Length: 420
Image (cartoon, rainbow, N blue to C red; front, top):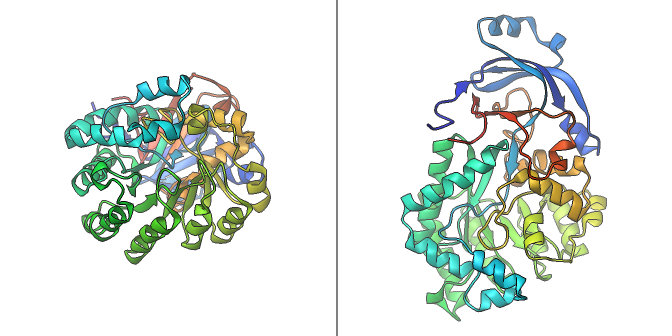
């Protein structure tokens, strides 16, 4: 059974809801109000107080089902705005190596890390990658995720990057979830380009990116600007190539050191800069000026046993929007729960619950360039919302290991999570 294709239309009047106020989240408040959601043709036609429902709309809804929310807490569909979901194999051995004292850099330089996932991904067929990835996606969908970013970057050659991006597209179609596919060709140096990083960036910019863009497989472009990744100058070459094709930008920035990548990305109008443990005041100012979202990834921080916190207070004071994501990947964040990331963001990064919830709704949608379609429940937007059997919004970040019972409306259909 495919949970999306077999799902029922969500059209009708959803009553007896406690609606989470997203605007209040942005002011640091957790606030709900009783209300209804009217859905027509898969889109929200009205959200708010029942007595504010227009008479004409009420007549249109009369012939459609009435859905009783039984007082459920109702939030926008969640958005996971940074994942590496499509890959071959796994890297549990590196988890053991880190526990034995090896650093992220040491593992990478010894042939582990990203390059080990490249080998496994290249060996897998497209269908094998689809079969391996689908359960991972379903776990996230079961928690109310209605939009997700999926990066390439484990192929590092045209045919294999294409394979990853094609799987991302197929997953979106199969599960009726909005998937933004991001080309991350500049993720690591493939073995066939050893000691020839500039030549590889030429391959990324002049061959891989144009071909994949022409095939309609690329929604955004990312790079790993880091001492074990690519230099600032090499990253800028990728940005220029993407900009020439009219593609939005993102960046893995300042995770392990300050490469001034965030300021560079902001200069090119990046949608987001992600990780940011070593973000400087200059980078913060540039992100604020550009409107770039700071995507924090507590799963990687936790898995790497990092102790260098992102500059949360400085981001707050500057008014830079903060998003939260799983950063699901096989090496440094094998996380399959966005709700767990909410808890980690609060406990490890000291975010408030309101900040964390904004970080997986409105700000996460902004980080993907989707503010008009996701992150809120608003008239005219596609119907993406979740009914939770919870007493208060803070419970979404409070429970550890418990997946609260929920009812999911995704893409205008009632899908009740991602289980197939």
